Image (tube, rainbow, N blue to C red):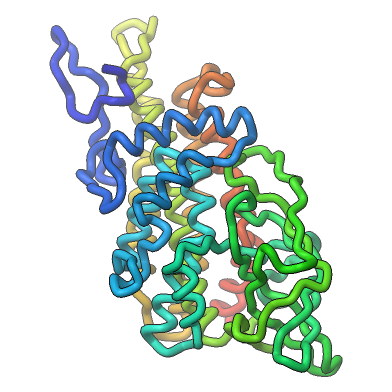
Length: 407
């Protein structure tokens, strides 16, 4: 038995084996996935270093996620889903990310389409029957919202949408960071319609991978979450069919209700991934500190050092706060501030996750930066959190403006 496999203390001579007791850790909280066994998680975990080292897509993991029905998790049972709620899916994603961060992050970009479509249909927010049918049929969806030089996210776009007489759009431009590039069938994008120059419109629609004028450029060779295969997607007069337009709005942060539902799913789910990464890093540090010997007088293990105890305590408090905040935003609130709370949760979760991983590195010491150590990969994986749109600058500007009565 390795220290990573230990959940409860087992006496071995006079000293218990290392253990984790925090309720925010999968090693202690008793969570039981509706889709995966402990053996599945260990298998995902064992593959992660190879995917990272080879900059390879998580193909074996993905096949298993599909086989278990995980990509349909939020769909209603009548469509072959499990009817998983946002709160349940946040917990599932957090635990998957604990064992396989890049796998969880990439599949996240499909799951939020599924969850928000199910909610939109139930609430009558948009005509998404075609989308639900496609998801039920096993179509894989990607997110195409990242653009080089676009610092306002969904408020505007450099990708062009030219309306056609039949209600379709011709899409031209480039999207970056499109996870699931080897396997997606449809990509959800936003693009700008300038057909009325005085009243430009942002169009939210989908493009089929096999549409003429769509190509993938394999550009992904990144610092972290390498297995997501988030290559660029290029559109050259590619057709987005008329029935696939799910929302339009003026340029700027004037979102229809459907986009509110989309963000309500996306933001907590992406936050949960980074919480999972941070929790894993802290657990590695805690288990290591309980095993690592010390030459200091009167201290046999690093876990006995007051400085280590203080660092771990502060990290545990941070993760408790992130967990509580994420739990709170999975249920929609009321009032002007309510739509901004998921944004606040995303910023707090991703920033705090970096801080906690940094603490874990300090606790473990120099060995943590070795390519052979799991923390080295987690340290890289957690860095991307604040870069997901809306990035830190956009989130803080939005929150600050509203809080100061300027929004």
